[in-house]
Length: 455
Image (cartoon, rainbow, N blue to C red; front, side, top):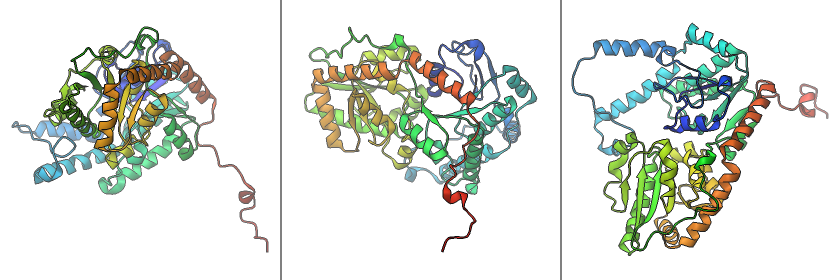
């Protein structure tokens, strides 16, 4: 098995964690990874790696070298644009220009040729994989994955974590050329693929219909050691006088900070009404630095420390209620509509009830509803949010029942050992399947195409 991805195997970042959990227990002598991010990978799952970073992009490589040689020392430029930079109306004109230029350059650089060094091609052949599994999301990664499959002469199995085929470069950057190229490269990926994977069941069914390949659903899974004890664990009521503890673990990007802020405001109203509650947010340090100020004025919300992967399970069990949020903004909900957050299986496995706040049509919210392990507020309605929050915070028996139901669902659907066996079976099938989208069934109409019509 050859894994091609931007993210390396790791225990502290979303895609890296998912990869580590999905392939945990895979024989190390049967697993290798080619990745592009600038970091040292974790070696507990995979021990054979090659990294190819900027050298696959010679145009950007030489431009960056030129910039470093000609750059004058001075104060760092303040980046503009993007979430966390403040409302667009408050940005200066230079900030808007820099934001536009960054977007255009990112699309331009992704369009430039990919050169896979001879040493990497030799390394790929030496691995002798039977199949290439790839996580994608950019033109370069698609080209790299296809190059690896071609070099080794084996099928490609792409794993889609978000609906980036719909959103990638949809803003028309680089005069629309980036969007056109992304679509063309995706078609090339599919022509070299024998099977596809989606991160959720709704994504798998939609992509199977959309792309004409068989798809299976694989999201993050949970090691059996991180499951709550179904006999001994229960959602513990808070001691009298102490706040009901809500916890959120995850990123604040993709507009999630806005939904957390709405939640924090609703909690503040409950506190004013005499109900002691508190939300603790554990987010990566980079997100805390960028978005933490957006939550700082909320008295019922506090920023907790960033957690390592080994600390997550224990932190989840210390909560009375776990929180998952998604953005209600149109662009964000289009991107995340088929996504299933890395944390949701961990939440359910912790045996704690989950409050979901985000558009009801998203796969993550549907998954929580199907699990029976939580309460989902699927519309951006402050009164409905306050009502369901109050009900969940005041009723320990309800929390206990929901936590047990979610744990039972996680045991059936998210255990790493079971997922690993199913993934191995799907990838074995992918090795045997023909490569490329199957031809459309031949109908009577197509059989007689071109014949004179009957009169």
